[in-house]
Image (cartoon, one colour):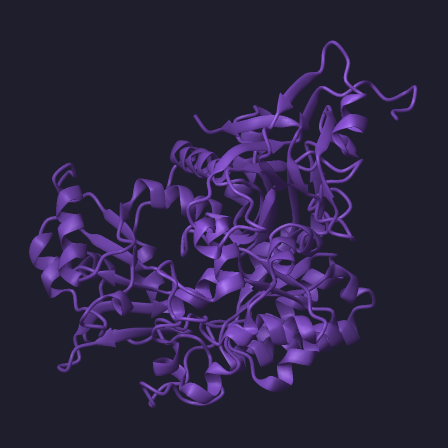
Amino acid sequence: MLSAQTPPPDLVLHNARIYTVDSRNSVAEAVAIAGERIVQVGKDREVLALKSASTRVLDMQGATIVPGFHDAHGHVVGLGASLQDVDLRGTTSYEEVVGRVRRRLASARPGEWIIGRSWDQNDWLEKAFPTHDLLSAATPNNPVYLTRVDGHAGLANLQAMATAGLTSSSTDPPGGRIMRTADGQPSGVLIDGAQALVTSKIPPVGRRQLEDQIELADRELRRVGITMVDDAGADGATVDAYRRLIEVGTIKTRLYVMLRGSLSELTPFFARGPVNDVANHRLAVRSVKIYADGALGSRGAAMLEPYADEPATTGLLVTPPDEVYQQTLAAAKAGFQVGIHAIGDRANREAMDVFERVERAVPGARGLRMRIEHAQILDAAEIPRFAKLGVIASMQPTHATSDMPWAATRIGDARVEGAYVWRKLLDAGAVIASGSDFPVEEANPLLGFYAAITRQDASGKPAGGWTPRQRMTRDEALASFTRQAAFASHTETLLGSIESGRLADLVVLSRDIMRVQPQEILTTTVQMTIVGGEIVYQRR
């Protein structure tokens, strides 16, 4: 029953199967919403008894409802930009990449930069990194830069390298690598910190284009049922754009911002302190993202031992460990959470060591809920440290299924035992918050849910799953995209479950993902997305 002070609900959804993701994993039939909050969850009869003449009542006809999906690690502006740039996802050869660039070239002005994203040489028959020659021959009058799928490498054409002044005498910058041909010339591929040699020459995005990118991303996120994102690496201009768009009601996705920059760039934010709530929990700025290493696919992940398929390298520490410590220390003193990007086993060890040092130096640092972003390859000694130090494992299930065809080739069978070890972490008491790392992977959280419970690709391979002992249960996977992701962003009392008093962020699905055959999850669609009691997406 509602109290005398509580208004009748504005919206009631009933005749549904509602997975609340509360502490008991309760399943309900109906939910009542007043304003932005849930006021009742339970049986149809008891919830429908609350309606008034003004209540909008929707019969869901048995549909499945879950809490709004929370992506614990995505890149909002990157997603928007990817929807504007040349899309190279799914290309099966370098020739196909160049073909897509040629199509964009047809509408480009001479001298205009052409930007693309998401090629992956591991998907090609020839799996070596490409050289610029084919691309340069097709684009003699335009500088081109094509970012690899992981964002940690890119391919520049001759025009772009000339603009950047890249020659055979150019030296590798700290935390980066210029790939070279046999005669010592730059091949066009730039790894991690070397990318800035070219990307710093690309004209900056203006205010209007930045806002367009955010709006494009917001529409896509609503479509796939994501109601909140931990935005993993934003600058001040992006935060200002978020504020403007939230104030005018243009974007609906909740945003938890992880700032990125040098210590000098972050210091003004630290001086002002964390921003915990803008526009009733639409925006928070209380976290910092730091890169410890690169990515596995481009051999930039920092490993304790050499790569199996390139023994001359152990990867890259893209930020010196002492700088990682100084940034983390300053952030903790200012009350900011820190998420350290760590993929390789060495980078994960370095990150844990930093958190342990900071916890000793800053009283209350544990309460900030420090995070490791990705935590992909772990030495066995690091696994219990997550629970011991209260560090959250912010992981992306689809990374495992994208990387599984070639991971063993990169690092060898022995180290695969420490790769994407969700079950080992959960059994050791760690909290896993799941995301997608969009636009590296597709934003659709149902793909991540499927990967988490199967460890298979979309065709159901390999049979039984890749290292299947590391699978999550369906309850664990759903919680990792809802309640546990909310915990990682300090919003677990407001979001992440369907309970009275919580903000009304809900998603209606076309199938019951908790009971259907795994393959059916891949064709499940979002029918409706609700943020703060407002229907912000409805499938036509």
